[in-house]
Length: 408
Image 1: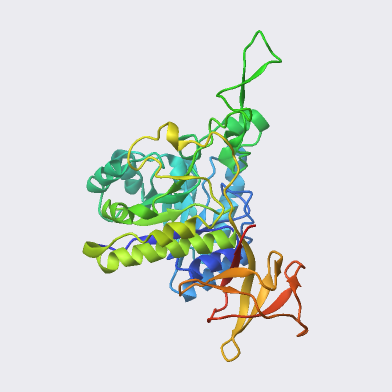
Image 2 (image 1 turned 120 degrees about the horizontal axis):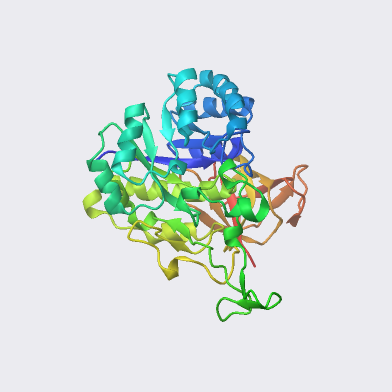
């Protein structure tokens, strides 16, 4: 059984580094153009170089997303873009459009190409087509069952890699090919500017009664009729790996570094445990508990075990569930004294009960008994954004560890 790749989102240089420190095998990032996440911080050319160096020094891979659905106005600048990024050393570029595929293949012939989920690959013939054109990998559409994925694996060349999303937000349309945002707000979802109208609260209006707004079901708040639950397959790692998927992809380039750290660590733990002893593997419920500590919508298994039904939507609210806050990131740790230097992210107090999430070890809980500011003065509260705080910890915590606190 081959070890699958764990592929994490890198919405910024900080998130790229976090993903790798917490166990990702590869990270996908976007440049300042041609990526489907304009809301992410994204990468300048200098940041790309720094991210690639950080990843490659640690034996990890970086993929560049360039998967918009382009219009005529995009073509000329895209040619310049590919010429600029070709020598940087990306491990692959994600493309969704045949024209952009051709440009990339001609201008950067040595750059591997992955076919984005935006290309909506849902059958083995389309996967084989892209393979014949020279694609190294096909990212499968989210609207696929495990049974269908197994058939694609059986009927495509063995050296064609298959990638699939296993965690994160779901679209109401075919893998993001949605026009609702265009019609409602003139923001093109297929150019990375989606305004997410599928998450809005809708009421029904009868045409002869234009001012009478009726809730679509019996709730005074209305109905979020397009608001899909988040995908979560962590309880089904054996089925995912046995289906033949090469790369397990986590969604979330606009999410926080804390989100990336928590989700990557949970999936890394379960993947490694399964591969270590597949016959005796049993899912550890603590991994799901970890995923409940990040901002999320209610979870579902998407299309993997059949088409979603009425229970796959969230009808009462478009808000995220958020029970924990990131309060700080460890920038240094003195093993002799047990003192951690922390960069504050949210206000916290002496006496707070906190948890410390670590890249290579289980998290631990403790009460804050000792706090000082950067000048060595005792303090009772860390109130200023990104202030430096000294905290005594009950266990070790390497650089990059994260302090979190349950919301009151």
